[in-house]
Every structure is written in C-alpha cells, then in structure tokens.
Image (cartoon, rainbow, N blue to C red; front, side, top):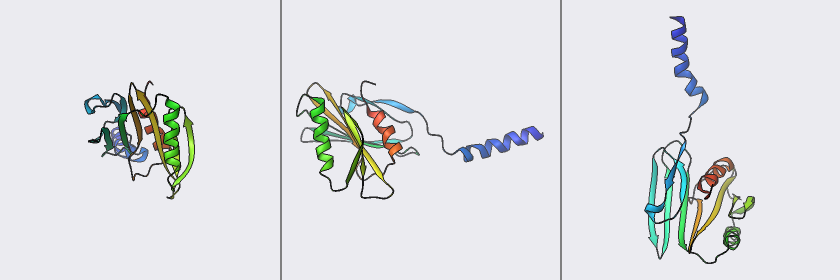
Length: 162
C-alpha cells in the first residue's frame, strides 16, 4: 500500500515539477496552400491563415497551444536565380529596420537576427528557398517575441532539403 501511495503521489507531482513537455512537431505539407514546401509544426492546436495578395501568397501558422511557434511564409515569383542574392536582399531589408540589432547566425540560405527594441532580447529569422521560378521566404510572425532558442528551433523547422 505504501508503494502504491508513493507512485500515486509521484504521478501527480512529477509532471508539475518537470514542466510542460511539448509534443513532437509534425511534418506539414504546404502544397494545399499553393506553396511547394514542407515544414515541421507543432501538433498542438495550430492555426492557419492564408491570403493571396497581388500574386504573393501569405501564409501564417501559429500554435494556439502551449508551444511557442508563429511563422509567416511569403511565396511569389522569384526576383533572381541565385540563392545568395536573395538571402542578401533579405539581409538588406532587415538591416533597414531601425529596430535591427545584429545578425546572430548567417547561412547561405538564411539568417537569425536580434531585434534591439525590446528587453529581454527578441529574435527573428529569415530563410529563403527557391523552387523553379518561386521564391519562398520564411520568417517569424510579426509582433511576436521569441527567445533565441525558440527562433533557432523554428528556423530549423522550416529548412528545406533536410
């Protein structure tokens, strides 16, 4: 009986001590939204908004569950054929924002950067993927506040050709 009570008490207390364990992220195909890509997204209550504005697809995916996840995806006709050119165009765009802090990580197809206007530090990313004549840009959703760790996880979740 004593062992049963210990197991019962641990069953109630242990999950609260460990904290919320997030569910594994699942593969999400974006083709039904007109975007030729797949990403990883949280399984818990994901909300999707899809718009088509002047030939540019605008898709936002946000977790309404416990997992912190909110990304924006833009897809439209590519403005060039070289991935590095597209990535540098995104860097120039981000650097033109007065709230830009610094680039934390840079790769040939994307980067993670700090937004300096808020304390504690806030981070975002841009990731560029080219498919035929389509340019796809992944970023954190607007007006969201994410830690570096959260942004790194989302950045890795949108990377193509993993």
